[in-house]
Amino acid sequence: MSKKRIGINGINIKGENRKKLKGLLKCLTDKGYEIYLSDGLMKTFKKEKFKSFSNQNLSKFSFIISLGGDGTLLNTVSQVGKYETKILGVNIGKLGFLSYDVYDVFEKMIDDIENEKYTLEERSLVTLINTEKKIEKNFALNEISIVKKDSSSMIRIHCYINKKFLCTYWSDGLIISTPTGSTGYSLSCGGPILTPDTSNLIITPISPHNLGLRSLIISDESEITLKVESEGVNYLVSLDSRSITLKNDQKIIIKKSTFKANLIHPNSFDFFETLRKKLNWGYDLRN
Image (cartoon, rainbow, N blue to C red; front, side):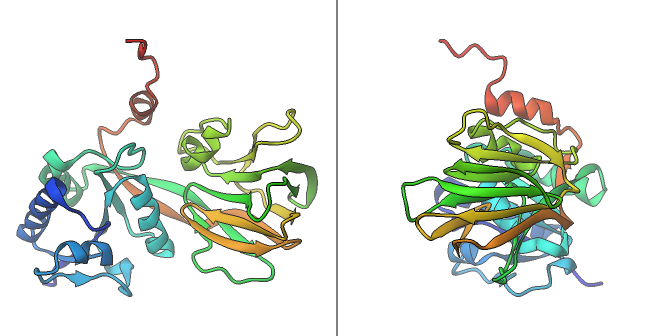
């Protein structure tokens, strides 16, 4: 019988976390997994013989472990893409909205996954369609952001929902966020928090000139068309942590992706508990 394949994505890990990672690898090896590491983790284990999952068909993997913080998990989603391979986030970062502190119970977590004692949550993504330029990995789990680049002047973003004109945003930029991304960049710009199972998108302006402009929640079945005018000619489009530069007056379309990110949660996972702990809701922070 062929071995079960598993991928681990992360950056070069040092110190105490490296010792913990070696324990994770031993646990997986003992359970009969064939382990593939990201290029970043390959640097951590130069002397050991592990395979790289670069250019591998990730649909053949049992699941992928994202080892780091939320940024690493976003990177993992970008690599998995349309394969929709299941992802377990193991948090060694700071905030960890999307990953979990499971180092001490890792073996039990793997046992639970093998025995299907876990929750699989489908998270929606958004896709960017540019009418003039083909963009690789043109999707995002958190948000797609349009941001000014070459000028201190505001940019003008003409926004259409299902081909109907909404308004022109005079601002530093615009964020199109998924429910997953509602606790990220959009939240810092005054946007609302949505639960992950909500079938919506959020449109949030960044520092708008018109103070009456606020975040707007729309159905995720909507098609958003943006026409950008920038005094600095170029502007920046960010897809989670990846950025590209586009030229003035290009039309872009944003819509929900046809595929989803499949995140593995412990059965004990509680989104509202995560909000309380990560955002310090209900805690007296005066002392």
